[in-house]
Image (cartoon, rainbow over all chains, first blue to last red; front, side, top):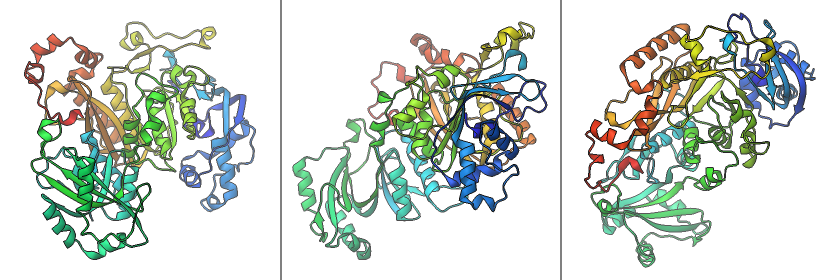
Length: 123
Length: 479
């Protein structure tokens, strides 16, 4: 599971007011190379919740991202884009769990696929 | 500028929408809601004919459209047409010199192909026809393998009624310079026959590419399939350069596949395509998106489950949702590895959820492309498809699957931002739609209509197709 996906997910259990962002429990992280596409990154950046991405990448062992969301001028810097690209698309959680910040319920991640299905009593 | 567009004679309803979508993709027009091309039919031709004239902004656009398409046999700059070879010669002689000379120059290489529709022209006759064009001053060298300029002499005739082709009334002959053509080699490469990981409802390669073209897929875009299954639709999108993402409620299909070398990832590896950026197990009825998330996808392309060959499921136990059992809590020690119950997901609710998801998650101008089933016995000429205030329907193409039912590929463009009011209006429309139309949208009814025994159908419908009369030779949309 890449951090792009993690940035879009939240715990929507019945009764939970704020299920975002999900805390990451790491069991296995891998890094896989992905083709660099600056246009895609520039389009995605405004839609990302930056602080969640920065915290998540730190929990996967990558601390190069700044804590504050980048201004548009920073998006032109290739050095910044490469770091953004690495955190967003190249770090992958292969095994672990995503934890709801309110209830502590764990959504397992196996073989890179998060299981976000709710149980009957959470619907 | 007007071009002759010759289609492969199949999937008739899909031909023009594909060209219109690709013209929008490659054209310089920015308006996404009012785009339409001008079309004409050649003299004496039936609308189902593979021959159409289309007005495209420039030769560059025409070439890009043709080369990316799946159904175009060729787009040609027409140098002349006529009902006889004498008429053709006159037309070609009258065609402006400045349009012809650049392609006849001594340094160029060329080739002339003789083709026909509705008849067979023998090799000897083909050579005679080519010799008959000697009044055109070709100065270049002939190169049959890889010529710079390809010319086509195409004859259509009125033998159509006898061999299942559309009834073309009179003979018509065309001569033109090829500007572009579909790369049909894509199909043998991606055919499902040789796909590593298949499922019962994997989308056929040709159709997956058509859907990707309808969705304006190109590099830099993010495409989502909420019913990803084995990833057959995302493979087509990845081929055209997009980043892809998919979800499915069945975790076995999306995470496990049939083994470490036979799963969704293997399909992408097989063709050397970039892997999807995200695959997840999620329920489209209760999606796991964070509340502020919106306008992230450029296109949503999918084939929702309509209960004929695969039924849809959603969260919540069936008995629980109906109130047959009281709500229960899963005991803590049983939570790990608990497989949540799911309930049947009828088509109307599935489509409503899909429209709601698309309304929120598509960028403005983004496209939702999906299949919708219809029963053919209705014979209703007014099509009624699901609607949503955020969307405008720009194309609907029917593919007949059996005598009982068809599937329609719907292309919708997002023209208005999502809001609570829109969502509410959509929900009301959805309930009305369910009330007024199509009882078969509810659980199981489509399945039973499609698979009901034949005699039950005979008494119900007065359809002459099922009587003993011989079928008419021309089969129209059956191709």
